[in-house]
Length: 424
Image 1: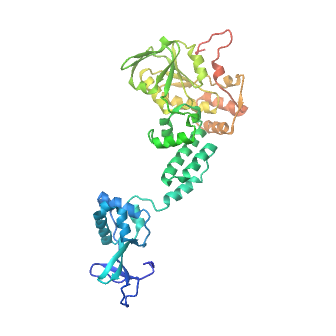
Image 2: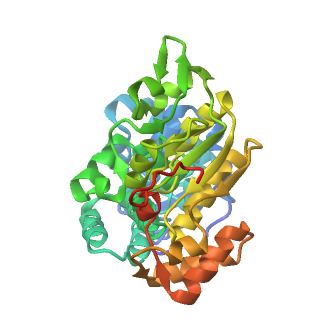
Image 3: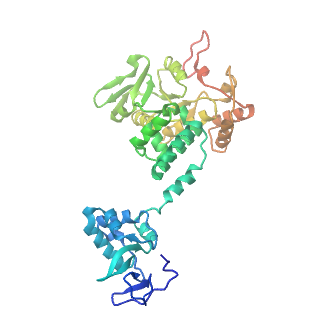
């Protein structure tokens, strides 16, 4: 069919309909064909339509092309047999607006409608909040070209090519988030699925069960520090936690107590509150410390970069037992950033905190050191551009100059034949 942009339309008739002939109007023939439509077209307002009309319009417009005739039976069939009346009313409405043109053929009894065409389907799709045909596939191909660093992520991305573009785009975004998670050192932490969902999409419930099932099938998310089990806060010291239905006496167990993080929402008080919270990242170091805690202190294990559940649980502890924090992390660039992030839990509540066991001389005195990676060096430079506590700045300066980092466990091992408290 020739385009109406290149063929002239006749004057409007009494009904306001213009005609463009598809056959020679001077020849009397039962094979005569013509197009009719209102001109100019008026804007449609789908927001004022019945929901049934909008549903039908979305079906019709999904792949509609301008000036491409859709046969009458096809249009009604796609609307569904139960919606024929709504479909006919919508057709009449769109014809009156000039948004739908009519193709007619001469028959023995006069002109009969054989099909319709959308005049401006792009504008109609936009007004209905629809994508253009092929837009999703084009967006997916553009996104698919973006690089992923690790083999397992690339293999997972390859599995998306057979999925609908919308699904593929959403899941590729999760792979990109997991790449950022790794680059940020989050695999070093113990986080929940809620933490990763918040990291990836800014909402703890934004990753669907189907998406988690796909991630589990394609990747070892547990190796990235993303756990499915209940998060547990490890606490040591002489504190007693009072809840609505009972109490936990940490001192009675003379060791480390694991508390389901969610249960701290019912915390109503703390007996024997500490003067100081000792926060330790390395698990072995925390266990060494727990065996020789000063009476005035209590200890909390910090599972790497502080996940959301940890920040919430510690915040609930501090609401009942506010006290300063001494925070000890591995003497490396990640450890500095982890300490800063953990310290914000205290800072946001107007409580003091300081780095502990992270002085340059303590790193220098360790029996073993490791060279910095390229990521370590880049992170150290980023941190040094920030405002930092003097001790942490001094540690980073030493790390940068000597190109060495360490682990904190040795700092918590008591010297032979000497017993020292955590305050020593």
